[in-house]
Length: 488
Ligand code: HEM
Image 1 (cartoon, rainbow, N blue to C red):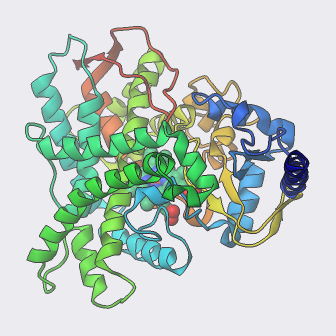
Image 2 (image 1 turned 135 degrees about the vertical axis):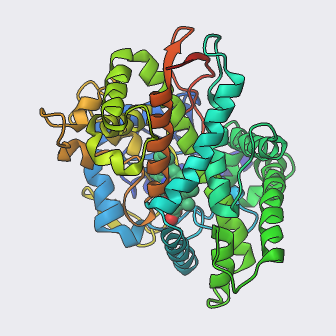
Image 3 (image 1 turned 180 degrees about the vertical axis):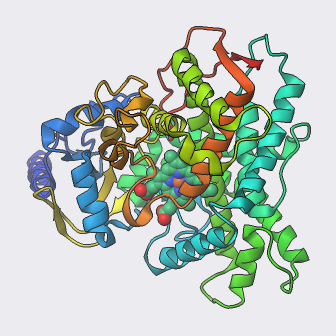
C-alpha cells in the first residue's frame, strides 16, 4: 500500500515536472530534481551553452535545476534587452546574487525596481558631473598610471620574467579608489588594498566552487538547513560582511570630515550632498554602490588588460603595428592623451578585439523577466530568470570570421581608418539596454590610457609558452603568467 502510494506520488510529480518543462523554450532534456546539471562539466559550462545555442534557435532553457532561459544571439538579446527592455530589467533576488551585498535590493548590481532606477540615475549623474569622459577623469586616471609606471621602473629589471598582474590590478583598483574616495595606494604600501582584494577574490572563488548555492537557489528554504544552509548561504554571507566593513570604514571616514559647503571631490562626497535633497539616497545604499563599483570595476578591467598583454605577445606583429601608430601620433616627448583617440583607429580597434576575443564574462547577473512575454517566437513566463548570453555574440562566426583569432582589422574597413559599423555594433562586451554597464566610459578610458602607455614605454615579450586557455570562474581569467617588460 505504502509502495503504491509512493509510486503514484512519484508518477504525478514526474508528469507535473514535464508539464512545467513545456512552458519554457526548448533545451536538452532535463531530469526531475537535478534538471540539466548532469549535462554540465563545471569547468566548461560557458562552451556548452555556446555549442547548443544554435541547435535550439538561440533561445533555450537549461534547468540548473531552476529553469534558466539563455538568449544566445544578438537578435534575441536585442529583442529582450532593448525592444522589451523594461520587462527584462529585473534581478533574481536569489543566491548567489543576493550574496554580493549585506542587504537585499541595495546598490546597482543586484537591485531592481524603483530602488535600482534611482540609485542608477544618481550614480550616472555623479559620474558625469565628476567629469566622466573629460580632462578631470583623465588626469585622475593618469595619476594611477604614473604609480604603475613608477612601480614598473622600480621593481622590473626589463630582462627577467615579470608578473604584470599586481601593477595592473593596483592601477585599476587605484582608479576606482580615487573615483570613490579621492586617494590611491602607493605601490610600496598596499597592505590594505591586498586585504580587500583578497577578500573579494576569496568570495568569487567560493561562489564558483559552491554546489550548495545551486540548491539554495532552486529551493530557497534550504538556506535554513544545516550543512546546505551553512555552505550555500551563511558562510558566503560572512565573507560579504568582511569586505563590506572595509568599504563602510572608508565611507564613514569621509562622511565624518564632510563639509557640505565645499565642492565635492569624489563620488562619496557627491552622494552625501545628494542625500540631503533626496530621501531615497541612504548610507546603506551608498555603501552598497561603493561595493558594486569595486566588484564590477576591478576584476573586469584588470583582467581585460591582462588578456591584452597575452594577445599582444602572441601576436608581436600586431603589437608592433599598434606601437608604430602610437609613436607616429604621440611621439616620445609627451604622454598619451584621450584627445589622440580619433587619430589612433588601429589601437582603438585592437582594444575592441582584446575585449571580444578575451570574452571573459559568460555569466553575469540574471535578468528576471517581470512580465510574461515572447522572445524569438518562444513564450517566456513571468519571473523566468534569463541570461543574455553575450559570450556567444562575441564568438558568432557569421559576424566574426575565425572568432578565436586576434584580428583588430575586423573592426576596420579596408582603408584601416573607418570603423566597420556591423562588427562594432556586435561588440557588446558592456551589455545592452537598461542595465548596460554603468562604468563603460570609465573602463574605456582606463583601457586606452593603461594599454597605450604600456606600449609606448615597453615591449612585451613572452618568456614562457603562451597559454590562452581561460580558467573558468565568475570572470574567465588568464592562467598566471610572467613576461619580459622591456623598456624602449
Ligand atoms: C572592461 C571592463 C568592464 C566590462 C567588460 C563590464 C561589463 C559589464 C556588463 C556586461 C554589465 C551588464 C550586466 C547585465 O547585463 O546585467 C555591467 C554592469 C555593470 N558594470 Fe560593468 N564592466 C566593466 C567595467 C566596469 C567598471 C569600471 C565599473 C565601475 C567602476 C562597472 C560597473 C558596473 C555596474 C555598477 C553594473 C551594473 C549596472 C546595472 O545593473 O544597472 N563596470 N558591466
